[in-house]
Length: 155
Image 1 (cartoon, rainbow, N blue to C red):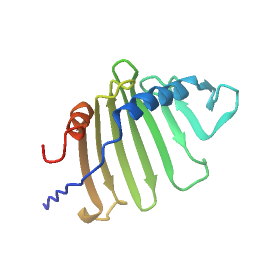
Image 2: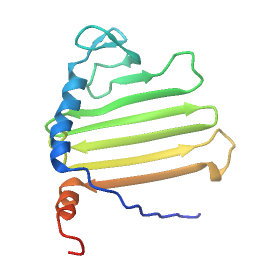
Image 3: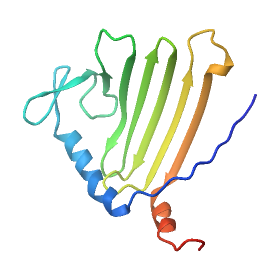
Image 4: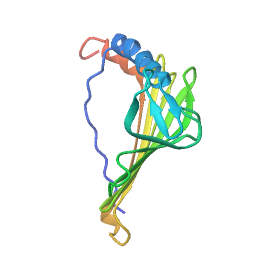
């Protein structure tokens, strides 16, 4: 089996910006409410193309479908964990005629992000062979990243 490894250089998003925006994103998500399968904004408008199909809104086990019900591509998001003081973890699944994928993202200490982890798997339709499959994972210690980004070049 062939194993491919690749490194990329990324720029650090400023710690202050993340510290300011992260709580806003979680506040926005937590301000929504479920009404049957509809997810509604605080003013009562439905969030378009988002349906709660299983579980309690923003609780472990909640399953959402994204997109139009008549679309050939299916996307779903499952909440694995939702505790702002500890971690938020979600799993996204995509099913299309030519591709299937599963991606899991976990953010530790969401209000003051410390660690982000991701893993994923993709595969083609049945019988498409090994060349249409792949897996990957990533992990970033954000505190260490920001500390390193603050150092002078070459330090």
